[in-house]
Length: 91
Image (cartoon, rainbow, N blue to C red; front, top):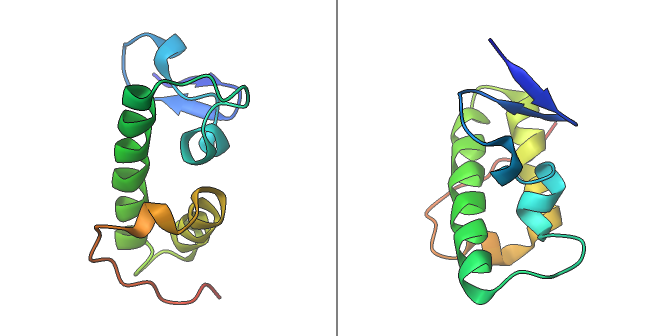
């Protein structure tokens, strides 16, 4: 069973209140900018993991590649620091 909240999907049984509001919030941060340094570090770590997965999938999936480019545009170059990702240009 899938559970959707706004435009985000939950793949399991856990508290949906802990999910980022949407893709944009994950990569840009909360709109009110009220996150602590620890929360920001945790969000960026997850954002980097998601970006790495999108880049990996983007080698064979143009939609995943477009999502990766969008994520980088939202989060900036800071997301690419410390990764060994190679990015091909989106079609």
